[in-house]
Image (cartoon, rainbow, N blue to C red; front, side, top):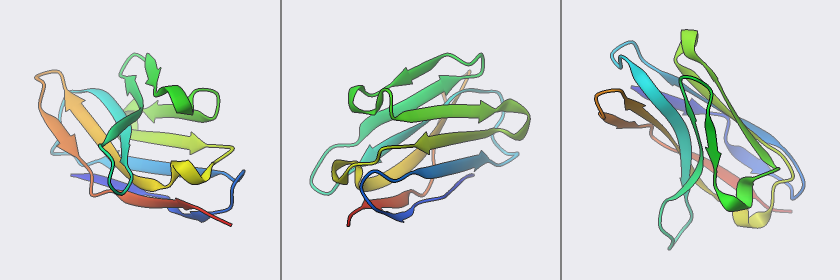
Length: 114
């Protein structure tokens, strides 16, 4: 129901853009966002954006990552710049409806390495 794409291998300092599209079976989406999980660590917030465009970022992502959204396409995007090895993780797309139903994508691997 959430299809993410755009992960891959990038060198430190490089950029990647993640995309996630919600299928038509998910209605009335309020918030969309990205979380990530590195091996041996808990899942953490990357960024979220509401249908009105309000954003929240994890502390280590501020100034480097930009989240955006296309409500008409039920899609969310994450532009990641100045990537660091510690950004290596599986990135998960998330969507939450106005009725508080929560949906997760399948995850896309981002590896930052030289």
